[in-house]
Image (cartoon, rainbow, N blue to C red; front, side, top):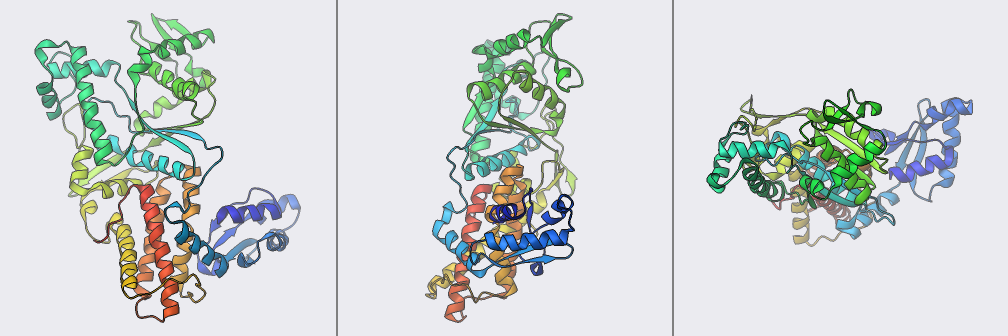
Length: 519
């Protein structure tokens, strides 16, 4: 609806109108402040601009689309959709079902979302797992909006951490990793017949099998690609990219090492790509990986989802993207830290010290739905205090329980109505209680929220919307009835409940959260 209204406003008044849902029912369904933004250029006051705009909007609008378009205050324009428009959208929901809100594009963007990508040197810790639900749902949103999306995990199976893992398994000097999992690896790897590098490579393969199980079976994420960093060295991409930058005069030698002039692209200092001993740095692999994404696999848009501790890497990687003359949209999203709380106390996590809480352990205790939903509620720049006690509650105080229970209630109403022989009615003109109208408008926000979540890359919008929808449905459930009502009202209200249930299904599908039959 927002796109339709925005196009109408733009056609009437020009500019770049922003249309938002109204905060209170008396202000209609949507509003815009475009008159304030264009008044100065038009040399009129906002109210005069709004009056002219309203006339043109009414002329451009499809017949019967709005119940009213009116001016509020000094120049706000409020829009109230007609019952005919609302009824038409409810019909679409019931007709299209799981496909409602999905878009098909003639020229879909080829998008890669790279997320989690924790080093394969141990089990996936809870702290490193925050990006899992975030990246998964962001990719799901893009796919729902008709784009060609690849979910990818970058496997750091090259470099010094592999050797350190091998030394840890073999109990050699330079060992850094500790914990029960190291003992598990020792049982698998024959320490008597291996050197540290070989032991590390075998350990990485074993750990990677653990990670794949965690991500797929426990987190519920179907990764399309597990990309090996080592392959970039083996196929020569790393050397080729360094040579390209040498040709452009962006690599120089100092103290026996090779440096990239990242300060020319906003970094605070130049960065080493090849150490004095000839070993290539992580950054060299990162540059080659960028080349692979844009130049070889030709993604139009790439989104890297990193932890906030990698903020210092952003400038250099962005600089490499520019230096290599790569084409496309490259985004890096940083997720702030998450603290795991239990009984009011923080649970410390450090893989190298051998004190850590894994994603597997958390999901085993609270379930996948609570794990995903409670992480998805927050914006990337928010620190999270993840309370295990709240996550385990089977009460309305638990956000995921609150949202799922609304969907379960909708399903139960439908079952009881079917048993009572009530047929749905597409004529909803008699649905006029505050609860009827509030729920009706809320379910129609579904497509708007998905589109905004994709445009702004904010999956948390969907989690929050599910709570808004649940709140409206719980209020409707407490006040209104279907079974026992007059047949015309019962049929109309049943259509509203069935449409609500369908939106819950579609929404939870994108969020990767289940919709139980009972709770």
